[in-house]
Length: 311
Image (cartoon, rainbow, N blue to C red):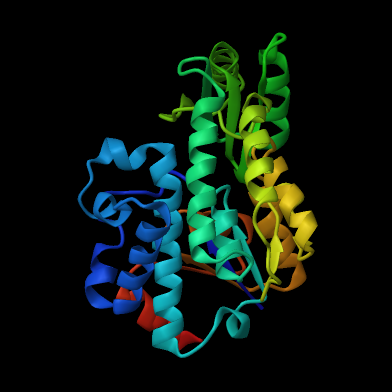
């Protein structure tokens, strides 16, 4: 069994998608479709930067999605296959969940781009700059970090935002509480406990205004039947029912990304190959969660040709 997986924020880089667009009209058409949907020359920003503008949440989110969908579409064209024929499940890390839904036919590309633009704007606006923060803990597992954030909160918000892999946990909340958690983490044996260069505290209760905005935005769009079941960030379980997906996408804004559990559950279901499209971020996590499974990252024409041969 196979799962197609998609990266989240932080995987953007100036030049992303450029070589693919030069090599494939399918990729160029994908980027043009996103540009048209957003009424913005996002593809030029992806190609040329500047980096600080590309990194803005409202640009990074649709850019990462566009790059991943372009990569998938080129693979489907070059391999003469469809996702429905080759993947049993799809999953995405945070914003990558929208990419996964687009890949499986739940949203069309234009709708996905507009939803992610709105999501990025809403998440950025939810908390004044400087009030929130995120940090990554390396070398400690979920339970010790759970105890640390509870101790560090002191009446403020401090929670686990991403359970990425064994020994890699991201926390989020009020800046002062996150700072306290980092100090506690170092005292309790974390190899590293360091702030992340992000513009807002994602996946924590402080994002409630963004969740409300996404509830309104998602109420206005149709979710189509999926060609592969989605493993949801919020539940780490497979879901295909339309209204359930809508509610989970709203909840996802404030809830923890249960990536480790999702990958482990898919492996338990029999998935023995995980293929990441558009990045080299989430497939390496798979190696630590389900080392017995095969992991592939597909970002270039060479990667696409190699995958097509393997499948």
